[in-house]
Length: 445
Ligand code: GLA
Image (cartoon, rainbow, N blue to C red; front, top):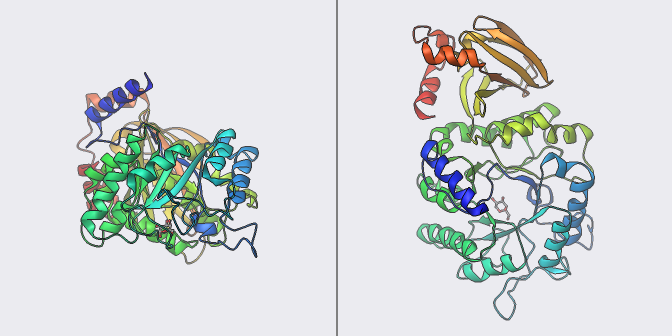
């Protein structure tokens, strides 16, 4: 029954918005939310000297506990994900993968049971090639048996890396074969790929294929705990948005990598910017931080219901940067219910807070607001600003590297008027310097 309903949903979706086929496993209908160990704990296998921070079952069990007790699960964070360095250096006698026996003495099945007992899901990591990026046994030549093993362990997500591949054709075939092998197990396992990341240096990846085989996919390099790294990923995404945005939708997401909020490298404003822009990009929200010791401000930001609601919007359209003016980046994301989220980042990191004058007439989607729209600011504060006429103005103050977020909704009467009489003559978007970007956007999305 659930399968039928899902197929119906997919058919409706494909008839309206989906450009291509989709991996039909019913997973990730909104971007997944959870925790992934890599950025914060990397390949720390030294449990002798650093027992509290090494990659071990103890760490994942503690994180699962805290996800329940500290409100993360209630906020929507569901997956507890293991990254590289969980494996033993050899397969067992039957050729099956095995976890490092010292660091995971109970084995992965027992850890999955524990995570499930908390109402959460367990993610695991493998690689399409001969070895993982950190040098552990890869899945090449073992796709079926590895998929079967993960299903028997009752794993819920597989992050499939692309290091040490033999050649590009084998890499692509490997991702497709693992996707099919996972489906064959009969268990619903979210499939998180890095396929396009490894192809971009050679050619534009075939996103039709990728979307058909993966629930989410990494396009750009690994996130590090710094503003330079976060803005590098944001800028990569903007530069390729005309290629990648149309492929995102329920069950299939572009993955700009982990949230590093709550660590060491981002200022409070930069943490806000990562959270908001990840919500605008309909990105998986996988935190990589230490939930056992997290600053209350970072915690409140990561659990901000209104930002999460934008990330999880059921329409599932990825947002895009619509303009870059005077060192302000302006993002737009279409939301369900005739609403649009807008975010403005102050990309100028010299001096103090700057004013961003918001004239209704210069909102990129202004045509949809004629004669009025409802505006609600979501961040820094949730404030209902009420109905604003096409000619209203409002001033935001944005800290250097910070971001503000607001939602514009189109009241029914405006929608009606829009439909009756499209104000084609009122071309006020001249105020935006890069008109090209706006026109490109209107063509593509
Ligand atoms: C690659 C991936 C990272 C992480 C490491 C682990 O670099 O892109 O996200 O999984 O491998 O070795």
